[in-house]
Length: 140
Image (cartoon, rainbow, N blue to C red; front, top):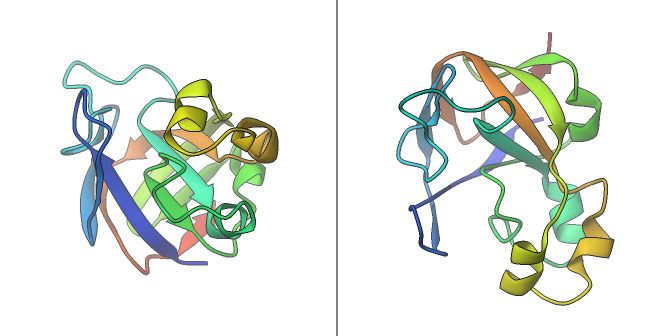
């Protein structure tokens, strides 16, 4: 159940880049990402997580879903309302991260329907640390 990809984005730019590791800051988000909030992230906006199997099934590449962390072998939706750890970082799954028109504009028509209720989740960072490619995902 490892992390397969980590993607970060710059503010007001569509490009994402892949990193081998990233520091997750409790209550704020992933350092260097467009959704990092110095003053504190609103609930559910610190991290997005998606299953690699879903990404592959709809014919996208990791990162094209605009989610930050792609994992394999994990019931991602099952983490909503639960605490879980990715490597040394602890999270609380807050809600499903439904696909939006922006994602459809960046990929293709119909992707909203294809990814409805399985486009990943939003989570809060409870205990910070570093997330690395290959880190396990463990429900607590």
